[in-house]
Image (cartoon, rainbow, N blue to C red; front, side):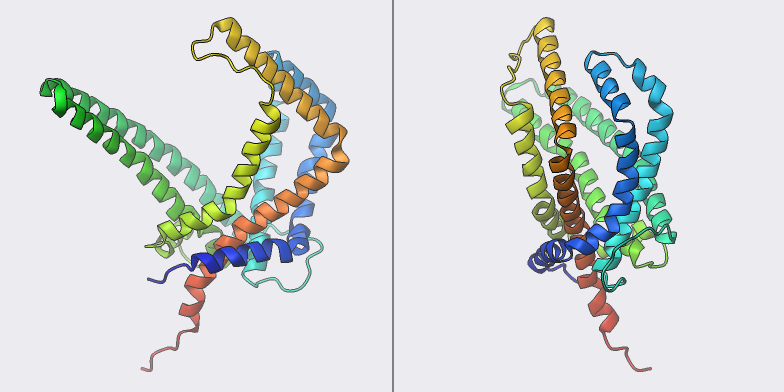
Length: 311
């Protein structure tokens, strides 16, 4: 089984995200426009809804739920369309500049079906993880009582912690194996079951895929943490460990007010926040999708170019 070249894949992904920035933007801007226009048109209603929800009033949400259902279904399809378009560039299926992209071909719907299947499997898998951990906790507790305390109980407690970590770690392992190469498998229009093919290609490459995920997602996670703790939580009085109901309510009210303040500021300075958001999204999608596609190419292309044995 071939190995994914970690360093080369990361370097190619970053090169792709920045050198092909405008080609990726050409894929993304029609979908972003379709997703942003409704939110811009309904900005007064959305701001009123935010104010109501900050005051623990959810009546406005009940009135707007049909809009949210249609909007999120549309956004889901458009996001998958963007990912397929970017993957086609990274896989060299689309040559030259891209000024406009809107294509709802078979790969988009195949990816949508795979993602929905993954969501169902993840829900079932997480329920099984919780049940397994609950069973392990019960059994270890029972054994701890039978051991009579002391060193045997401490050893059992340590073993219980280790055992309870196994199901969630196995869940995470399966998620990475199933999802990391899914987009390029679908974009390349490989035959058969896409999730199964993604799983097979990822064999003995888990830590390599995990390292690539850290290198591509890590900077954005750090950026989000910096924004959250540098702006949203800055100056807010955190409630003590054993806070009263009044203290918790005061903190929640302060958080709601800060969130509303930030939303107003983003809308007021739209000429800064919108271009900045677009640039970050283009780089984010380019990095993540590009890394997966270059890893896929490293696994597939040597196989495709290998000489065929004579009969």
